[in-house]
Image 1 (spheres, rainbow, N blue to C red):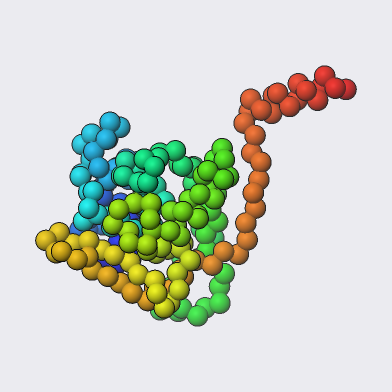
Image 2 (cartoon, rainbow, N blue to C red; image 1 turned 30 degrees about the horizontal axis):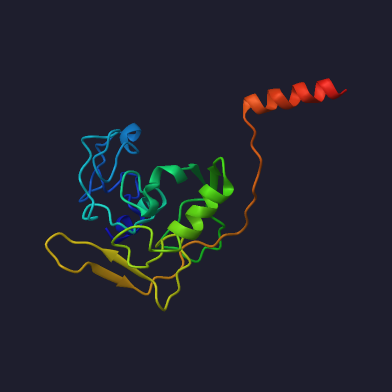
Length: 200
């Protein structure tokens, strides 16, 4: 449950917004990304989770894609990127934690503006807690620059005045490398090919 609260999804990919109390195995794979935290024009029948009782406000997936939730500047949808994760190595075996096998995740992020999308998400949404109400200057629990001394995570609980606070989080992710690559559209490639043929 704590892992699901930190991430915002169960290990099988089902979001807490759709199934807050169980892994929701019955939810079809194609429906596991069709959710929102508050009702909106695109998903009018979404659960109203403005306070984060289903999916905590500071969970990884909610911070990095707040969907229709309120954020500073009212620009939650302006910073969206296409993202895909490709795992490498065998699944982790908790019974053999020190097996020495390399494993991890290759993240692919596609956007139009490095500054306004990827860099903005990493600097403001992952590592600052002032962009949305209820975060209280916390960091992203999964990819944030957490330190073992002061990192905290808040879990709102319905009926309680104060959220449950987890303390002493350490970094879960170590970045081994990164590359910014130019990925032109098919239209751009056709344009470049026309320009190069005209110049020859």
